[in-house]
Image (cartoon, rainbow, N blue to C red; front, side, top):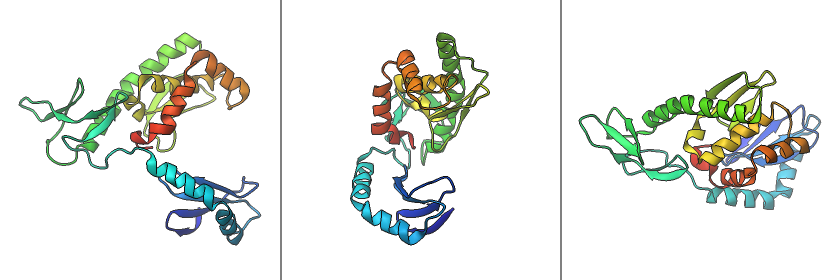
Length: 225
């Protein structure tokens, strides 16, 4: 729970933290974590000591590409890994296209984002599980169940029981990035951690994983995370 809030900075207590920490969330808000024995005045002093780092982090955040808040005909959005313009598809019904994909909408005027994201989600619920099962068969991973969710802070997750959960927004990402996230979660079925053994296994099944990580750091903000 936040203790004190001023523009762009929140203080958060953590029973697990052993020291003060400073981080920058994906929405640009700085988070100062206070350990169980800490206090807010010391946390403020810690933030002040690391102001240069915070300024650099905020500058990097400001340079990251972002998707438009409102989607209309003519807006460019990320689709299948490419920045693609929303265009009218023509015909008797209101439809738009993103490259070769056509989507029905209720009207061509106004904000199309909610309608399109619903259709992206429907496609993701078909495509992402199908691809996960393919890669599970390829790697021999013992997957029990695959779900597609509206996760706000992660690309995917894996449970000890064999359930893989994926963010629907991966349907907008490049195929190589989508596959990397799936491989990443599949490897967690063997290693429920991020140890050296985990990354060695990721390297084995997905040699280009570093390129995918670089894309996520550079352009993941276009997916709204």
